[in-house]
Structure formats: C-alpha cells, structure tokens
Amino acid sequence: METIPRKVRLPAIRMVKRPILLAVWIILVVATLGIKAISMGWFAHRQPLVLNGQPALLFFTISRGCDCQMMVVHNAEAQLTAWQLPANLGLSVIRLDFNRRLDLAKQYRVARAPALVLLDTARRVIWKQDEGLSDEAPLDLIQAQSHIEVLISDDTK
Image (cartoon, rainbow, N blue to C red; front, side, top):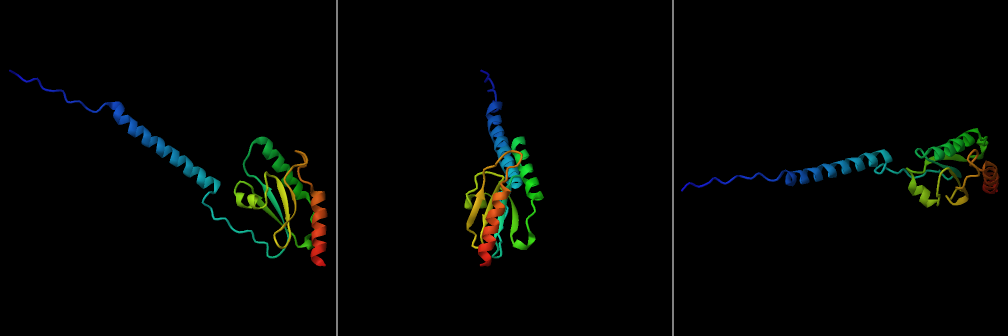
C-alpha cells in the first residue's frame, strides 16, 4: 500500500497580509503624527514672556487658517503696522502666534485671533479685544490707544 504524500500547506496569504497591513498602517499613523508634531511645534520649548517690568501690548495672530481667517489677520496686521504708537511710551508690542502659544492664549483668556491684550507692569490684563470690529478693520486701535494712555499716565504718577 502506497502512502499518499500529504500536501504541505503554506499559511494562507491573507493571514500573512493582515499583520503586514496593520504594521504599515501603524507606521503611517505614527509618521503622520510625527510630522504634524514637528510642524506645529508640539515639542518646541516655550520661552516665557519677558516684559522687564514694562507694560506690553500682546498681538495674537495666526499663521495658518482658511482664506477668510487669513484675510482678517492680514488686515489686522496691516492696521497694526500703520498704527503710529509713540516710542516714548515704553510700551512693547509683542506678536504671538495663537496656534503656537496656546499657553499664553489660555492664560489671558483669548478665544480667537486676531486679538489685542494690554498688560500692565504686573502682567495683569488692563484691556482685551478678541472680537473683531469688521473684516476690513478688525482691531479697535482708538480704544487701545486710550487705554494705553491711561495706563502710562497711571504709571508715571
């Protein structure tokens, strides 16, 4: 009696493909998150806000957004650039990216950009504007100027 040789079965191809596909998927997800983490600055060192005992005007802006957001931000930046702030006030204007400095946005309770926050020498919020007036001129620089003048006159007393 002859024995019939048994067929040697290789593992099913789909059983081999599953772990490989799962590994490829995991690698792609981790690579995507890594690229996003680096580009968004998740691991970047957050430098503390240095005011040197002087009042400051914080300007929160964004570097990325939809077209309508970026139009409002560009208009706000143009407004701030054209604004003639007297240099003898001792007030520094600090530009901050809202998306990269969420710690400061939370600390000063800024909900959206563009926004202005006026701080006194003790880092207390004197005035804040995080609601735009219009898309063409979102910043209320007249009100900011009046609050700055009051703050500076109080500091000189």
